[in-house]
Image 1 (cartoon, rainbow, N blue to C red):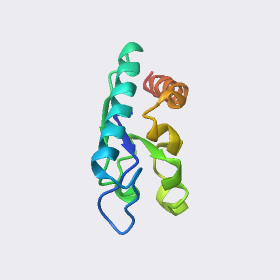
Image 2: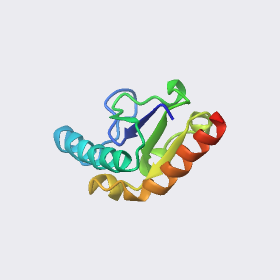
Image 3: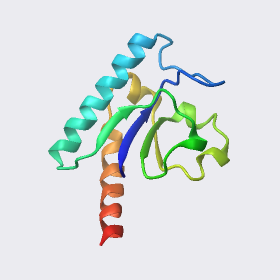
Image 4: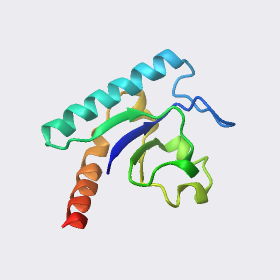
Length: 119
């Protein structure tokens, strides 16, 4: 995985879901989620850039990036938009509480899989 991108608040396009409906609050929650995830990755010696993706468009998303997407958003996307996407669903409540801990094990698994493919 080249980067981890967190999708929980989309600002462009026809469909613009939000966490709370307040951009400032949503950005703060997503930033805190990313900060906690970054700290955990660092503690596990995984050097991967993390960013919030407000401009999410699944058809144009790079397949080498890992997308952590609000499960509520995933449920609204067409299946064909998710086929080539490398993503993990994140519970809406986990984003609201800025708690990435449910993602940790799957991220480790993906990281290990990437390392095995490189060997």
